[in-house]
View 1 (spheres, one colour):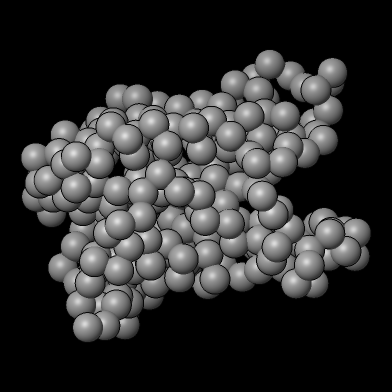
View 2 (cartoon, rainbow, N blue to C red):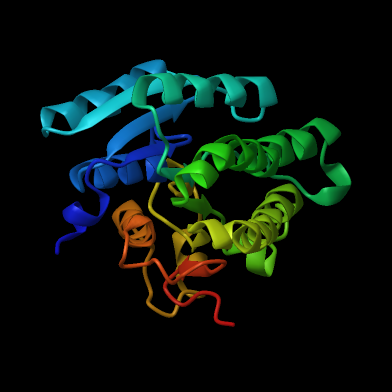
Length: 250
């Protein structure tokens, strides 16, 4: 049985899927046979490019706009998917932002904007798909957190707090949903080659990574694909899988 057999025909909602890790996850799940819902907040053109790339490869996808930090927009997003696809089998909570700054200088709006999108958005989306998945008695929820949520990072108190919160939310919902055949796991990337890491001082970071290199979005996406597959990962729930080159070892 191939990975395609395990995911084919399922509907997967991926938040923040117009670029970066979210885009690669969308392409990877589509290649495995899933119908992919490419969620975006502002980048309609980029989202449509992802959909076009998937369709050009023979896959199935469509784009839907929603700011997942807004509860009502998430509710409308879920309704639209259920009307169009009649189900949601996989949820990938990927959307996120950074608003870095030292705590003493951090503006309240920068704290709240990160918490609202990176943590509250995960809650809204998880709650939004829960009713459907509970009725189906199956589902896969995969939250993209970060190693920063495990170890903290100076200048990222808001981001670290949100990502640590996602880990706690993952474990709690995994316990609540397990009896209905729904697994909830998290993937914690380390430093991944994206637009967000291009401006970083690579030498100082690489010295802290045992494998000595940045990761790729494909490596993160393949981990997500594994967790989304049934029965391959059916007995894994409430876990945090680190894709970080050994940066954080616990």
